[in-house]
Image 1 (cartoon, helix red, strand yellow):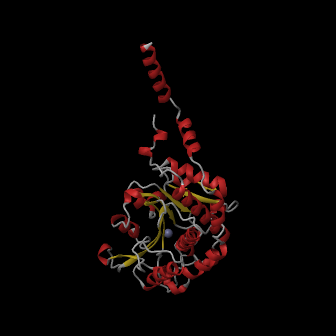
Image 2 (image 1 turned 90 degrees about the vertical axis):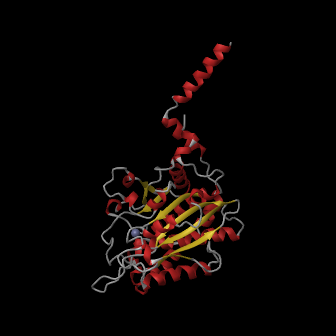
Image 3 (image 1 turned 120 degrees about the horizontal axis):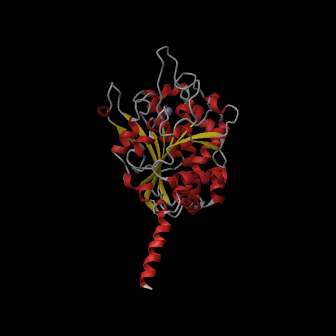
Length: 351
Ligand SMILES: [Zn+2]
């Protein structure tokens, strides 16, 4: 009897050990349960093309002089964001009305002046120490030598206004008694265009412990369509989603399949992709710290980094749908029972 039992135990272990990778992935997919679907629909519907358009026309107007890091236009943009969060009654993580994380001039080179990240925050009701960061850079290229302004409507007025609308939707939910269980930081980064310096500064001087930062969703250009998708524009590129957490990847897919059915295009996520987008925007500084990330991006277009990246060229319906996807993904991360699992610890992928 005894011998038989031991053999059985070995046999069982043997069976587990040969569980196919595809089965494990299926188990992981099945383990993800969408939470609060009625509420997600209700509050994602408060994110509208009209409101995104209104904010984007302001942030990409000539008044902001191309939002160059450390210059007057960038300071006006940070002030605009701060005023917005005060009006929306969304708190600063610093308390009071201090919404800025100031980066000193000494951090930069090439005579760049001191500059600011803008931070707004909604504390979680049940697990306040676990944090999701939604980020987008607010800076752009300033003024061309000819005097033309780089309005940066897509890059990255689109991501900036997406965060504003997502924050507003979460705050509405909170006021109705449906605040997020985990905390959310709305992080508007400066100095991306000069080498992702704003996110580097944040990760070197984090306001919340990085080990409790469970994910970073980074948005950089989501208001336009690239040449590849001219025929079917219901798409968005996702980069990085499966690199550090398979759960994040399948959670993101499940949220999209449940509510939106946007074509999630992963072609730029290939490890050998020659564009290296994974390491080219702010999320990479979080990924370098082991924090799972998703980078949302519409690809490059003829107006990329030109003074012709203007707000009338944005597809506001598309911007709305993509913003809603990011909102719903954040909701799931903030409210699902388990904390997002990084792959090195992912029990569901072991054996
Ligand atoms: Zn950008």
